[in-house]
Image (cartoon, rainbow, N blue to C red):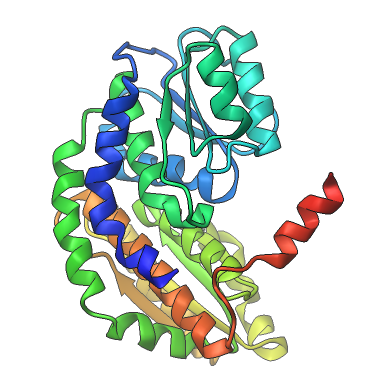
Length: 324
C-alpha cells in the first residue's frame, strides 16, 4: 500500500494517457458533470470539484447511491466510476443515466460496467488492476477533471496536473511529517476538519484511516462545524481520547484562517491535541493532491503503529457477502 501511495506522482501521466485513449467526446453539457460511485471510486469527483473551485463553469457533483439526481438528462455528462466494475450502486446509476438519455463514460478496470459500456458504445477509461480501489485515487481524480473539461464544466487543468507530479515526488521524499502526525493520532479518535478546498481531502483522510489503519475516524467542514460541532469537544475530551487535524490551503476566504486558528485553540483548551496541516505547492491541484497523498501516508503510518495490515478490509468484504 505504501508503494502504491508513493507511486502517485508517476500515476498522473499514465492517468492522462488513459483518458486520451478512451476518446471521451468533447461536447458541451449545460448540466455539467455528475460522478456516480462509492468509496474510493467516488472520491475523485469530490477532489476534482475541489481542484476546480471557482473556475467551474457548470456543476460538478458526486452521487453516492443507487439513483442519480432526478434532473439528470441529455445535457449532463455522467461519469460512472467503479474500480471493480461490479459496484451495485454504480451499475444502477449507469442504467438510470442511460434511461434518462444522458451521455455516459465508464471508469473501471473491467467487470459488468465495462462489458455493458462497450456493448453500448460508451467510452471506457481503463484503470490498472491489482490495486486496492482506494489506491487508484489519482486515476479517479484525473479522469473526473478531464471529463469536466470535456463537457465544458471546467477549463482543462492538464498543466496543473502535470506540474503536481513534482510536488508529490518531494512530499514522498520527506516521510517525517506523516510519521509525526500518525504518532499524535495513535490510539486516539481522529476528527479531521477541512474548509473549502480542503473539505474533500479531509473526507479522504477519514476514509483512509478507516480502511488502512482500521480506526474509527470522522471528518467535518468549517465554517459549518463552528455553528454546532465545536460545542461537543469538552464532552469528547471527558469521555473519549480524541485528536483533531485541521487542513488548510492558500486562497481560502479571509475569515477561514481565523476560524481554523480559533477552532484549534478551542480544542486544545479542552485538553485535546490539534494538528495543523498545510497543503504544499502552488496550484489548486497541488494543494488537493498533496493533502491527499499526505493523508494516505499518515493512515499507513497509523496502521504500522497499530500492527494493522492496510491492504485488508475484511469487515467491508464480509458485509458485501452478507448483502449478497
